[in-house]
Length: 284
Image 1 (cartoon, rainbow, N blue to C red):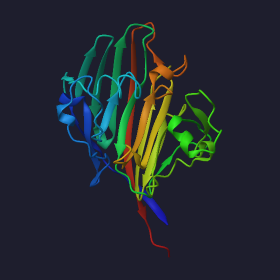
Image 2 (image 1 turned 60 degrees about the vertical axis):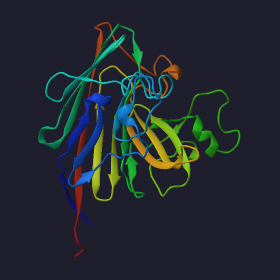
Image 3 (image 1 turned 90 degrees about the horizontal axis):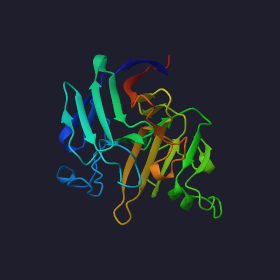
Image 4 (image 1 turned 90 degrees about the vertical axis):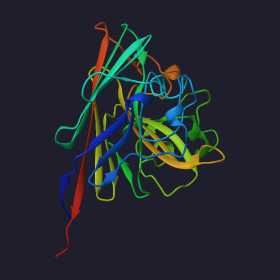
C-alpha cells in the first residue's frame, strides 16, 4: 500500500553555447533526461540538420517543418545574469530564466516581437523512462495524432489531406498512448490540446510539468518512439513537451493553433517542473 510521498529537489544544467539545451534534470539520484546516440551536437551550426542528442531542446518558432526543431536550438545564447540567457533573431528576441528555489524548477520565458507575430514553442524534453512508465493527463483530452500514426490505423481511417486526426486521450483512434513500452517498433507524435499540466509516473517517481501563459493556446506534445525511428537504425526516445500552440508545424497551424504576439509586443510564460517519490508501506 502507498503510505505517502516526499518532494524530490530537482536541479537543471544547461549549455548556453549550444542552443540553451538542458543537459541535465536531476534529483533524488535520478537523471530524468535521456541522452541520444547521435554524435556531433557540439559542432552544430545554424541551419544544420537536427542532431538528436537528447536532453531538452528549446524549439521556436516551430517544432517540425522549416527549420526543423526551430531556429534557436542550433545557435548560441548569451548570458544575461544568473540563470538567464537570451537569443536574438531578426524577428524575435527570447529570454529564459531558470531558478530552482526549494527544488522546484521554475522557468520564466519572455518573447518580444512585432504584434501579430505567430509562433510555436515547445520544451522538447526527451525523458529516460522505463517500459513501465506512463503519462497521466485528464481522460478525454482532445488529442491530435499526426500523419505517421496513419500507418498504425485500419486502412481508410485517416482523413485524406488532413494534417491530423483528433480523438480522446488516452487512446485516440484506438491507439493507446499513455504507456511507454516495451519497444514495439512504433513511432508517432501527438498533441494534447488545452492540456497545460501532465504527470509522468515511473516506478515510485513522479514528475509534474505545468505551463502557465495567459491568452495563448497551451498544449502538451508527445513523441512516443518505441524503436520505430529513424529507419534503418531505430532507437527508443520518449518526449513529453509542454507547448505553446496546438500543432508541431507552424505551417499547419490555423488561427487558433499558434501563439500570437499581442499589441503590447511580448508574450511571457512560465514552466514549472516538480518531482516527488512515493513510499510503499507493508500490509499489516
